[in-house]
Length: 460
Image (cartoon, rainbow, N blue to C red; front, side):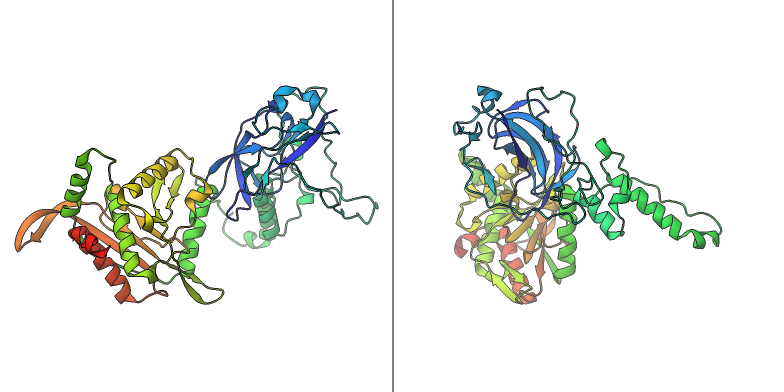
């Protein structure tokens, strides 16, 4: 006999508490193998495919595409067991063996943070709260399954959805919907959802809030010259990557007393050095990699800038390793992939890693680990054809180097006016970790290395 197992949204790492369903990869009634990706979700860090640790027949899916689910909420249920056929459990080299109760003992190891398909250990019995009126266990709240076009085979036991009561679950999936209702003191049990199976959607809550506001403001509205006019325009939700960027930049502006200094530098010799390095036929070196190499040398000279501020303990934390993030504009928004241990890499290795991360960003395949842990950011906004900027620090870092376009400009070179390749460098820093002298020294050292790459050799 098949056993129905429930698979919940796992911990995706880096403190992420929810994810938005981008695309379902399986249908109800479809046979899935162990560790087969079943859904594509977008977190505040990246888009990832979530594999299911069970093999069997999908009996239910929870959450529609575009909806957000909290970590630990149900994703799908799968009927597993011998009756499901060999194809249901043979999808992994680490596939499990049948257990005495007809279930499966999976063993393919951890797939994502917080869960895997190893054999489960003994579980502690969970005591469920008892409803005061009925004396029966209170039903656990869970989202409604999303209807699918292909039905479940008759032989597959489908989990029974608990009916809602006064003290029972509320038909809500999205944590955002709950938050809006909570902030507006709206009782969700008083609403009738317009979604599948009575699911309460964001539009239902916003409509109820608007009606309540209109009722409250009715006496005041009567005294005005006319009815209020709703503001027209397209509304774009701040969620996913865009929401994460907005939250981080807003927090940076709130918490970090930043300051910016800048200088123009003659990059003609740097470009000549790059041309000479790439003439040998080996791996190509990018300008961004050369600038990253210069930054690692500058941070070795001014280590107070490779730091973060612990506001709870009122301490500056100077970090031993340099993890350089670089801004990458993609179709999904601004991302900052991180080159780990940049201080230990050669210029060629830096160039290769930057190229790998850039390609992954464009394809939407960056992992949360690729986007976190940075200690310093390099922002090449010159690719947009602009000369200067005052970038916002990537919280919780303490500094960022901005690089404008490298353009031909008149420049005094060796006492004579000449046309040279000039770039503007801007440096934004957290004034809590250092004073202007340190920031100016850092930027001047970077500019000297750009103008005379041989200075970099003397620093290492």
